[in-house]
Image: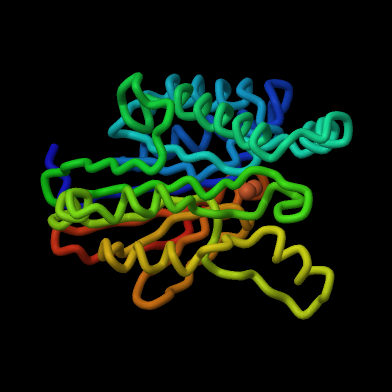
Length: 288
Ligand SMILES: [Fe+2]
Ligand SMILES: [Fe+2]
């Protein structure tokens, strides 16, 4: 069947809490079944799959996607969130006990990121050489339009002073450089470009001093560099999570979509329809 419109579903922040959480796993089955019956072409999951950086939770998601026929490169894309890579309790315990050097911490973080990329290689690079996958570009050619997903890792290692909750984001200069190469930019020219990252561009502020402190620990430090890169790529949309709110907002002509949190609202998700002309619509949908 030739689809004139490409339909993309986006969920985020599952925060899976192990196999015993039957209610959540039932909710996940219901939502994935809905994606199939509603005829979506692609599913994006923008990080925080696990609540406590447990590969057992990644496996739960993989098994669920497999059982719904969605564990394929052209069907689903995943990226990591801070909760997939950083176990805060463990970080603090080891920091107090061993006071390791920043380089040691950085290496441990890289190993965890590699483990994530290897585990989900089918949904990331599609081959087994994917242990150092970020950034990655996935171009899927549909009959009516070529979609390019440009994925960045924004999760940043935990450091006691600079990143006390492990929730602050940063995009490495290596990733920004790699995506600014002319060869990459030219490969995107005929595509509808969608950026993917875990952290938000928007600084979620409130008037409360306590919340302001909270916001600082959750922010994407070099968000202006993300925006500049997305503009260079002529991205139309950037999908993210991290702040558990279903919301969209526009910055300099680029629409950012916060996929909210499956954990806190398992029936709500973001749906996008992209037409051959490059026009698109987005809304948040609640399954019956
Ligand atoms: Fe989260
Ligand atoms: Fe997060």
